[in-house]
Amino acid sequence: MTTTEETIPKDYRDPVATKNELKTKEAQLRLNEDALAQTSRSVLAATGKLAKLRKMRKEYAKNAETQNLAGYLQSSLREIDKQVEKQEELVANLLDRESRQQRIVEARKQQLADFLRQSPHPKLKTNKAFLSDFGIVRALRDELARL
Image 1: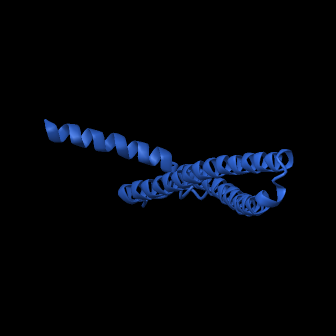
Image 2: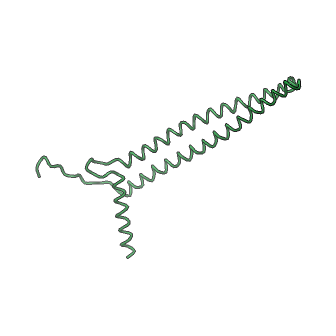
Image 3: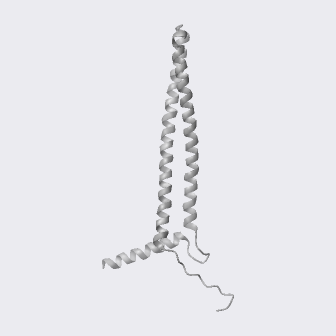
């Protein structure tokens, strides 16, 4: 062998460990996607409640003006204002959480894609091709075992 020739290095990856790492990354992504979906549902529910509170406040204010009940409804209006303020704060916090979770999900997707594109050496197969070959070999072994 001459010095200009380069040999392909031995691939020491364990197919089972590589597959388990892939499964772990996929499971982490699913968990983060589930958390994002739950937060999105919470945002929707909180936003709906906020809209109802604002509508209620508007109706109370309108009735107070038209029926000269301003003094009587003033305490109710203050209570509704407090609830609206709390609900607005909750919606803002949920939107922040949703935004963070979206960034986490995008990062997890990128990590998964990067993992599948990785290779221990430029002349060796990527993890995706490596796992694909391992799946084919495993299927052949299973088929031979059935014979």
